[in-house]
Image (cartoon, rainbow, N blue to C red; front, side, top):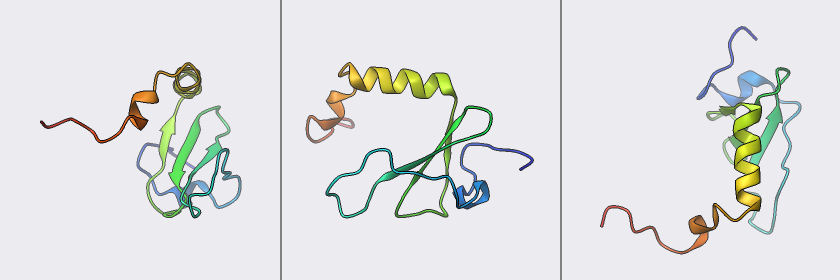
Length: 85
């Protein structure tokens, strides 16, 4: 792979190595992740495996996971968005 970048087709990263680190009773609609050789993490939507992959650095993923564990993302589950009002 010459260049890995945000928005590239997830299938261009390969079909092996994707996993669903968290999944529930949501009918199979989940996020899949792949750890890349340089420590970055690719994220894709499981219902669109050929769609775009978002690429995060190790530090970005660590910060997100620590923040989510600390409740910093709980507002995302608080109901309808009020943006645009």
